[in-house]
Structures are given as C-alpha cells and as structure tokens.
Image (tube, rainbow, N blue to C red; front, side, top):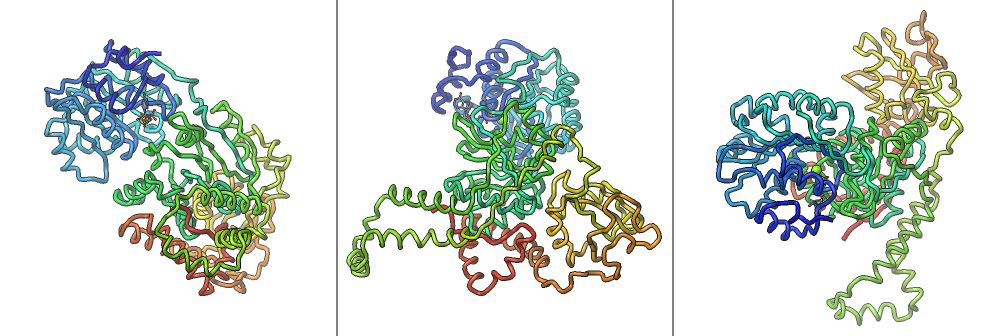
Length: 637
Ligand code: ADP
Ligand code: MG
C-alpha cells in the first residue's frame, strides 16, 4: 500500500496529515491524488460516502494552488450548507501549514456581506453551495473567472436536489481550460450528463463497485402496518439501548412530527430539516455530535452534511422515493471502518421497493421481526445491569451510606437488586406488558407484486375506497389530490391509489389496514378554512360514482351528515394536530433557549406531569393516528 509521502504531496501537507493522524491514503485517495498532482486533467471519481473523498480532491488542490496569490483559484461546489462548512473546515485543517491560505465557505442562511468580505480578503479556495454561489456571482461579489480547479462534490446529490441549472450557470463564469473534478457516490444518468457536458475526456476512477453500498452496513427490513410505523420505530430504539442513529423521514413535516413525538415520549431526539433556522440546525447538530441527542430525525437533504462517524443505526422511517437515495442514507453508518445497520420500516405496499433497492445496492435485506414487548424488557434490563456494573463509584455517596444502609437493613441483596432495578424496569414492563405484535403478516400478494412495479388493480378485498368532498373545482387533479393525501396522512407514494377526481368531489383508495387512520385523521379536519370530509365509499371499484346524485352518490350513509362521527370524542384528531402545531412553537422556543438537550429532559419531566394530571386518557386515543404514548425515561446521562 502506498503512503502519503509516495503520493507526492508537499511537506506542508504531509505535516498536517501527520497531525490529523491519517496513516495511509484511502483507496480513493491513493487513486485520485497522484493523477490530480501529475496531470492537468478532468476527473470523475466514484466512491461511497465515508471513503475520504474530501481529502482526495482537497490535498491535490491545496498542493497546486498558489497561496501567495490572492486570486480565487479553486471552487468547490457541494449540495448543502453543512457539507460546505465541513469541507471548508477540513481544507483548513489540511492546509494549516500552508501560510497565507484562505478558504472561504459560501452558503445560504448566513450574511452574504460577511462572506463577500472574506472572499475579498483573497480567498484562494471557495467552497460553496450552488444557490448562494449563483447569488454572489450575480451581485459581482466573487470573481471566478480565473478558476483553475473546480470540484463538484456529491454531484449525484446536487443533481438530485435540482441544482443542474445552477451548476451550469456557475460554470459558465469559469474559464474553459480549468480542470473539473467530479466526486460522487453513485453514477446516475444525470451525473454522466454533467461529465459529458462539462468535462473534457475525464479520467474515471471507481472505488468498490459502482452504486454499491458500504460493505460494513447490513440491511434489515421490518414489515408493519402503516399505522404502526411510529410504534415500530420506538421498539427498534428500545431494543437497542445504545442506539445512536439517524432516522430518515421523507418530508420536513414528518421529520418534525416524529422528532416531536419522540421528544415527548422521553427519547433524546432532535429534528434536522430545512425549515429550521441555521441556528437551530447548528444546535441540533452540535447536540448530536456530542451524543446528547441519540436519535436525529432528518430529511435527506438536511442529513447530507452529517459526518458523524459512530452512527450505529440508520433507520428509514419511510423509504425514499429514489432507490439511490437509500445508498446515501445507509452510508451514514458503517463509516470509518465501523459496522452499522440500516433498518427499514415498511408497510405492505412498500415491500416491493426493497427489491429494487437490493438490485441497486447489490445486497440482500434480511427480513426481521419487530421485537415483542418482553424481549425489549429483557434487553433493557440487561443493559441496565451492565451499565450499573460498569459504573464508576462516586465516593460522595459515602457520607450518606449509613443512613441508606439503615433504610435497607432488613432488605437482602436479591430484594435490593430487584427493587433497584424496578425503578427503571417497571416503566418498560408496564408499557410493554400488553403490547401487541407489530409485525404485519407478509401476504402472498407482496411477492406477486414483487417486480411488477405497479399495483394489482384487480384486487380490492384489502382496499378501502373513500369519498372525499373536494374536487376539480377546488383546484385538484388526481396528482395534486394524491400529493395532498400523501402529505397530510403521511403516506408513501404508493399508499394512496385509484385517485379519481370529479368536479366537486373525488374518490381514492388505500389499503384497508389504514382505513381507521384515514377516517380518524379527517374527523373535523379543516383545510383552507373548510371542512374536508372523508367517508368510506360503497363504490368499491372505480365506477363513476355519484353520476346523478352529486356527492352523495358514492357515500355509505347517504344521510348528508357532514361529520358522521360526531359522536366520537372530539379530542382525538384535534389534539394530535394541536400538539404538533404548538409543539413546534414550543420546541423552537425551547431550543433557541439552549438546545435540544434540555428540551428532551423537559420532555420527560413534562410527560410525567401530564400523565399524573390525567392527560393520558386522551392521548391513548391518538394511537389511531399512529402516535401512541410510550413511557420512556430520558435516555442518556
Ligand atoms: P466522503 O466525502 O467520501 O464521504 P470524507 O472525506 O468526509 O468522506 O471522510 C470521512 C472521514 O474519514 C472523515 O472523518 C475524514 O477525516 C476521515 N479520513 C479521510 N481520509 C482518511 C485517511 N486517509 N485516514 C484516516 N481517516 C481519513
Ligand atoms: Mg464528502
């Protein structure tokens, strides 16, 4: 194996490498660095997340630029602010002995004028997100007309995020004869297109198989009913007491909601998504890095910058739309030579996606069962026993020992242990004692659907057809309605189907097993100031229900009653809505006043308060929306 010395890097860089403790180049570094040092060439490098790509382009760029000049010579584009900052910081570390080096990070959400000033001071290297870069170019705040080296880092992700136009635009302000180095984990069509359109005979290097996921990661999936998703998530966490994980959700809304629920349920969790302020995001990331947050609930976009090495589990709360995105997600764990587990919680309608992901990552998923309550209790108990066994004794306790001993004078050791453990254990036990099995039976239909990529339109036994009182006149077509339903009900792309939009009402289908959730959700649901009413339709198929009788045509009750579940307690749907609304408000307050750490502690305390004041009875009804009350103590000390 080669050493960094052999790759030909200069003394200043080698010195920094020693400080960093990098012993030998990673594969992608060993391949890319000599090429980039020796040749003026374009390069396409494909390597998984966590393989050291930053150094693979960073060292050659630092080696080649002239630090005595104040001209901007290197431009690195990366998809997110976090990544941008991370790269800039790495480069500063790599170049700490390069006297006069000025690396500037340019990204949205911070003062553009400060960034412009930093560039003006003579930034030889700019690390930027495409959006802010474009902005600064149009305001003449940067001059990239003398760029010699441009890097497109995480190119696949930048394109995923729709930055193609921005990249084109930015590169049009750079010289034709610069070198472009493209780094990517995967090589979808769009990346090849960039390579074709913007690069001249690039040398291509690949580390590992293209599109192959990191080998240290094992992949598991858990089949549950859609309504049990959140419960399943909690069980997976409880079954892994030392979990340190990123939980991926598909939308910002889901991300926020899942994080809020976890916090309320006493987990040390935090949300990371684009609707949070920069400051909030920084705080969350800081808590996560410090392991004060055990579960970081994130969107794909926001999570791109996460470079935390010890993540034990990646949990796909929902599968991403693109199988490629799964590669990125699972690449968050199993970094730096460690092993990791990528877990996927799927409902029946999503099982077939597992197959297509397996094809892309060229690895098989193991189908696993959500542990039952008693297994979790056992795991928790043993984990507690180990923790106590390994705890360093605090001698401050000595002075209270006599009085404590007096208290336990008649208690033998076994009983003492039992009592001691019960403090923590009983909560779990009570919670899980009567818990149900969350594993959905895998039906033969799943395998039938296997590769078809579509839904068997013939079968409707397991489906529910609904009537909904919005239609074309409300501005919906089938796609918009489907998107709307998916969003509010937090469902996946395939969970709402056979959407049939009429003038003033519509129909749609879901799997029968989420019927309850759908109906519960739409009790008293208002959208744009009007009640949106959803009812089960008699019209099972896709016949043109309601042809003559207007909206009542397809309805079950035909009674014209707006909300036929008026007899149901009002609290349920509303309280869940309110909780999430006010929750986010409170949370951001709490967060801005000192970060998530406290909010998670507050969560636990509040919880017991609320419970003792009888809040639970209403809560338990929320279980129909999938967010049941767990009982959970604060996780980390
Ligand atoms: P990628 O961009 O491929 O996802 P990074 O460049 O972020 O990966 O590197 C992942 C981690 O590995 C970082 O913490 C980085 O400091 C570390 N690293 C990079 N190169 C080496 C090396 N040669 N030896 C040890 N650690 C390295
Ligand atoms: Mg990287």
